[in-house]
Length: 394
Image (cartoon, rainbow, N blue to C red; front, side):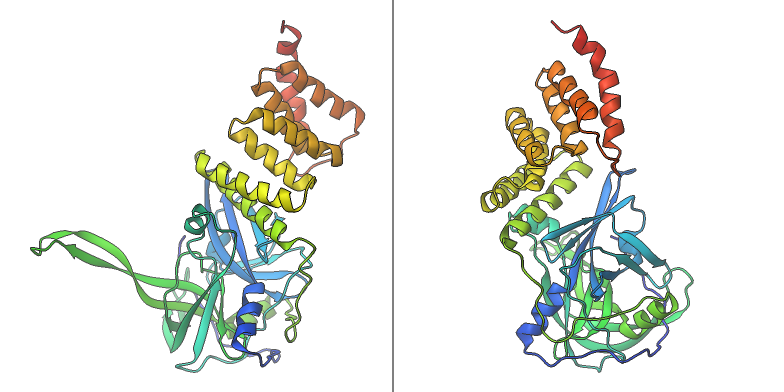
């Protein structure tokens, strides 16, 4: 993920809403207001993971511009439980390295932006999703990480694209890839003092016992930089973006089965990574494990069944895939995605006529609605390809 210094101009807007709370509540609120962002580039089959945080209870999420640039689609994971696909990009400023997304999710907590620059020596926490792929590979469910640090003061730098003079918050504390776009939060007040944008690595020479150089290892310096909240507030005002943070320690509804939601979101993230990158059976298997956990907590959920069936098919478990996707269609018979994938699984199993029957029945009898990803068209194209062959099948 690319990190560049950005431009900023200190400006004061309306007062923020601060709340006095125990340290545990500051941590909980900061984590609840932070989301994971996956940016996928389908043209190059690449992806990046970054963080963002809500500044408005209506779903306004801000992040670094470099987190979402060069992507063909975005996926946001809210509170580790809600999967939001294709959020609207509201504003992007490459030079300031700021971007705003509109996320249609009701279960959000919004963080307050401070109206002053932080004091030197103040305790801060950086909240985000560093090294998320490593964590997921170890089988953990999706969760944010809090990193502690201290404000070193304001420093002068250069902007990202125009190379103009700018002020940044320098902090000490280990910030990693994936923290980009996440909030830098005052550990006492719970207000956001900045947005994490850059950590500084360095090369350390490695030597053997005799002192002979073996090579260089990239290390973390423990120095990071953040965009001041005052700059974010000015940028939001210039783009007519409003901020309405969550007041006090209100807790959004957790839903009836939050563990199932978290397992589903984790499986979805793993499956998406596996689909974008060269096929990785380990990632698919991990996704299946999380989906199966979610299904055990919420049986017959069509959304879980749909994704689980697709993951089974990717692993070549065609009998499981066909059975699971049929169960999904029982409660969601007009899902073009499931119908399309079910037909492909039948074809892969050597049952072309069954695939044709599935697709034709869907098009003829369900009056399928339009779909944003074009699966109705894919079904028609698959029928045109497969129908002549199925007619000649013994």
